[in-house]
Image (cartoon, rainbow, N blue to C red; front, side, top):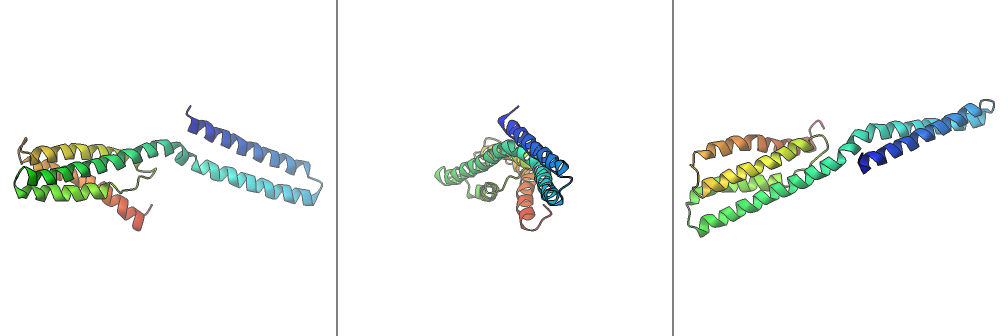
Length: 180
């Protein structure tokens, strides 16, 4: 069991103990209405705190994986943006056709936008998968631009960018006015 799970279990047991203590106070104050009312209010407060903590347990358990996904997403998209910027420079340095900029500039812009997406607990695994997929697309972009593989692979690059773009657009639209 990881330290996160141990901490969650420790805190949950502590809150349960607090509810049990408050319940005992309420039961022992059965003859005194003022003590009963005060104890009952404390019991309700302790139960509310326990229920609220219980509601957040799934998110707390997912947090270490979400943080890892956040780092993977950040550095994958930024890394691909750097690689694409280098490819733009190489187009001019190697005197390649300027037509490759039509492929490289949108790819550069897409990777820059992707590098600023937020990674939430609900969709962190989808963002992580997209971060790995952007490397495959980046390799294809480099190989096509350098002429190692056929320019027909641009169709595969475009097809791969549709779901990648979808993850980035979904992230920005749900933060502005979506249903999350």
